[in-house]
Image (cartoon, rainbow, N blue to C red; front, side, top):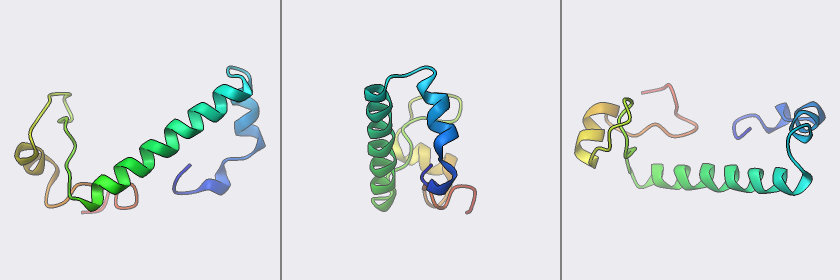
Length: 80
């Protein structure tokens, strides 16, 4: 959705409408958009994830050891 908005078309929304009302789809989209922006912004501040891959809550130093030199951002995911 964030990296290829053109991939989201009428079929995607038709499937969502099977389970959600129009208002719920807007709310879900707003939540997703907020979170994508939030995490992208935090990436610019070099904040690391608060959770290890196994779900443990970790501090920034431990997270840096786990995730490497820089936290993965939406655009940089998979590249280090």
